[in-house]
Image (cartoon, rainbow, N blue to C red; front, side, top):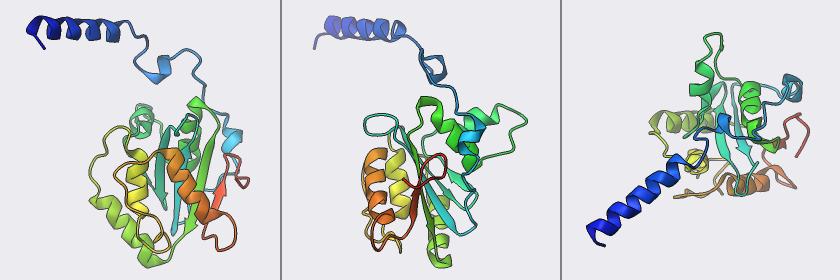
Length: 192
């Protein structure tokens, strides 16, 4: 590629980015507002020995995945803590508030809940401590890899990349039918 062609391509790309429209989700036309608080009123906060995987499935492939280990939130490559902490009155992460935040692009949110033995729960907490930053688009991979190989998630494989929807399908197998080890809930706490 010649220098002229490369410079022209860069200029065209720069112009396209400048005219592409809103750069932040909250500026996007048609963006949903958060669901009313009543929508998540029945959603119980995680128990001290509980892991709750949150899957936002409002787009093809899903939009986001996060995880609570007890009251500790892991929001890989997410914007929740940054956005909420701009409000000085924000008390900190909660499952209900995180759920409401996820509804800005729709109501297809699922919560996969698992009560764990102390050893398994401690192992997940240690993995959370050891985890580094997550690049954009790798939220579901980060969440899946926190669980992978640990009892009772020993059938979950470590992945290089996966989507939130694919992570949801893996967790569906653990929360439905005979031998289920957890439960799946919708925003209103009803079963999936």
